[in-house]
Image 1 (tube, rainbow, N blue to C red):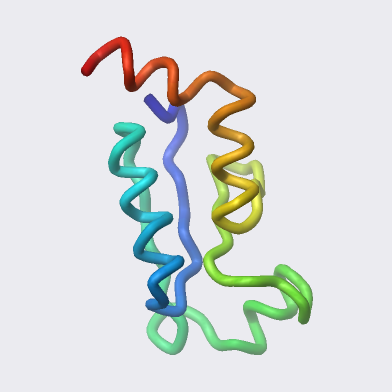
Image 2: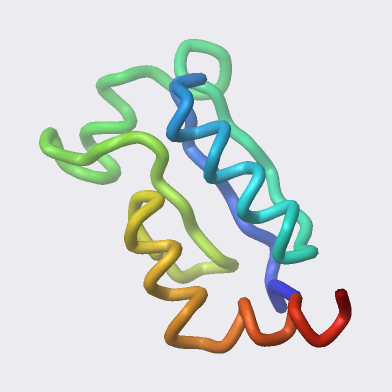
Length: 87
């Protein structure tokens, strides 16, 4: 279970959909902010840098990064272990 509310900054891509599915499978709450609905590309680049990839994921106040970094974070912090215990 994700202990904090997660936030996904999304452009609607398949990678962003995968991130949302990952967070759902981990059992946490998340908010999804969409490009051109909740923020602009310029605001995204100012926040995360011009080389940042979609999606960008934050857990509470901690910026985790893109999907691959979220997978790494979940593995390092035992989040997958918790989902297999409840399954």
